[in-house]
Length: 308
Length: 273
Image (cartoon, rainbow over all chains, first blue to last red; front, side, top):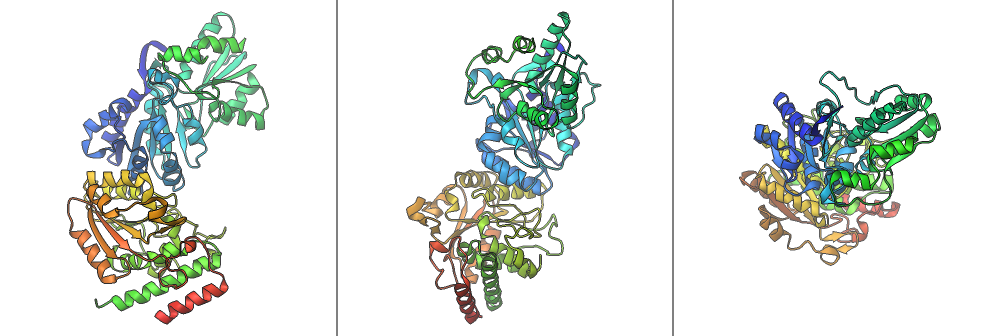
């Protein structure tokens, strides 16, 4: 992990999307008046004929994307996660998931790390909403490199995909040589004292905790779930068998998110206690991203506390 | 109009199959299916460039039944056109059949868009029309909506985008039968004046009697020739059209006839042949 090089995964998405557009004529992009924030503006500049600003109409945007997919396009429809999955939920369900349309739904600005905009914009339920929709694949990359991989990988899947990207710049974790595989988590270390299962912008917090604990001779492993659905069952079971304490952490509600997905696997395959870190039955609030995370206990220190 | 008689005969057969589908399943939506029968008959036999032997042809015209609950009308027309055979009638809405309660593009030949959640079809139709423009193809896109359906907000998002992107390859038909489940649309949640709403959203607006084939023909011709903006055809129709006891009755929105009612309805339609 390179703590000195921080990049927001939404920026990585924008860059990868532009490159994908260079390579694949079928890729079209729709945005709902947020292209400078979702970073689809790089694509818009490079491929203006294949970029469609749908204005502030998220429901219509998803429906239009579905129609374009039925004509052979590969539409990426982007907005803040709260709108692309929340506001347009029935459109995702009836016009994308059920007909298994080749639409890539993009939600940027998930979670508490939205910061100052506060609860209305801090989407804490996007994983819960999308994982229950049949046919959807979900990517929740943790850094620049994995985010770029996810964009390319999504374009290869012939069906609905949800990709979530973060507003906040976070450390670059991987290097260019890293291999990713759909549905396969990436395990850091082989410690036996505990496992921290993480996704998205919480992976760097887990890695930070791992580093601090190493100095205290406590050896844990961290798992990055860049793919949320399908979830990597084998890796969950392996870690549960090989390590002592289990923790999940997500910048998301603990209801229906990564922690619940892991506990679903554990309860049926290898029952074991799991401490779920995330937001509990409450909304977010305004503040600087790191301070909001601290207020909700999503820090390396809290991970360490829970492991001890 | 030289082929008016044959269109009427086809529409009559399609009406009989609508009733058969709903009667056999003991479930479904006859009222609104009967009100759009003449429009769908004209579309599939005169207007649309579609080939039952090549239902996925990328150059075909597209049709979206946004009021998806009127699937019996779409299925009957598709059967009459030869997309699938009439043996499927028996399994409409049954667990072993392909004919789902609402149109399912993944399993039913000739269905271009899955619909059922009202207000979503026009957005998909806009996406198809936008793709056609992008690919410089000359196919056209048709979308039938209910007059109650246009109470949905998404319809107006889609209408705004259709005119913003100058989708003159898109033709919307509003089935103005004046009734929704809870009663007259003007009393439940009035979408009137429908013509002025679409006009102010930048549409070319045509109003017709939706059971008059000459008027239907002229409206589609006008839609084809109108450039730079989408067209909406507001078709004044009769819910339950063709079956005396179903006409203009909201209660026949989503109810199946019993044996006696079914026999009477078929008899009435046969007298029209």
